[in-house]
Image (cartoon, rainbow, N blue to C red; front, side):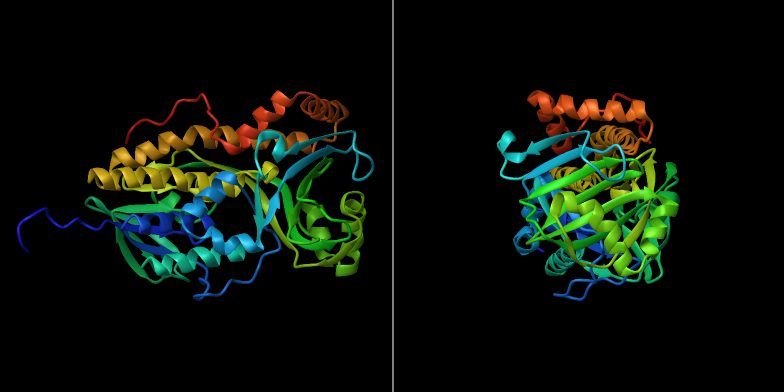
Length: 411
């Protein structure tokens, strides 16, 4: 080589987990010039193809959509997404009947065209996979992570499909994260005893872009717009009742669904696949270890109330991407202690605050005791009457929240 600046070293990144958060993190790293290997225990969708759709959908708030725009994948997703122009929250005394109280949050009240968009997770996963392939990343499916070992200043990720050395490991491998356990990071894990039923269905009346969250004994019943006269459903119940609902024949399930949907959207048409998933509260004690970070459900699992789960995960990705970009600009190793600790300190207060907030809201939303139901109704009536409070809540949904608790010390 001739004289001049030395060639810039290409840092190696291994991402464990091929859900939307892991894929988005891998794409951010690839766009920054890193050599990226993404490992997922599941098969990855072939180029140009979407995997089979789940019953549930994903509601992405504006910050998450802005991240996907920066990554160049939103234009592909927008035609199949439905705008969320308003959120109606209603409190019921029982499983049916007229609301005791309700409040409407309209995006235009806050100067926004919409709060976000609702779309199919398979389409999101396929778009991110194709963008990663175009960016030159290595995608390895059916490669469950088995262990993470330290080798000098590097980490070695062992999987069913071989070993992968990395300067930075990003653990995005879900609630049962092998990466989290291998790094020795404890987590608080609490089963809630509740399940969420996810499906999508056609309905009689137009939804007009309004998402409806019904607080009722047993759990939240949420209807989220899809394109046309279709909506997705997140229906939370105690686990035995949820399993009974999932076991019903299609016609019997339709009866149960329609009597709850009819006051809001009229009759129910075709119902798609039903999925059930147990709700677990999970919060990792730390988000970083030497040469590694956790994000998404490897770090936190939140209640579906308020659509904070995936949106919090994509906020993790956005913060990590910014820190990696700064490190690359300074010529600093991307797995250095200063980088991973900066990520932990930037994200942990917001994650802790959302964890506490969503747990409290989920408990209040499902409350059966009359005093708690009365408090729930009073809270909604106050929100309906005080615009400043509605604004504060919307800002909390869209922006990071502080949590005044001590942060972990350095390694």
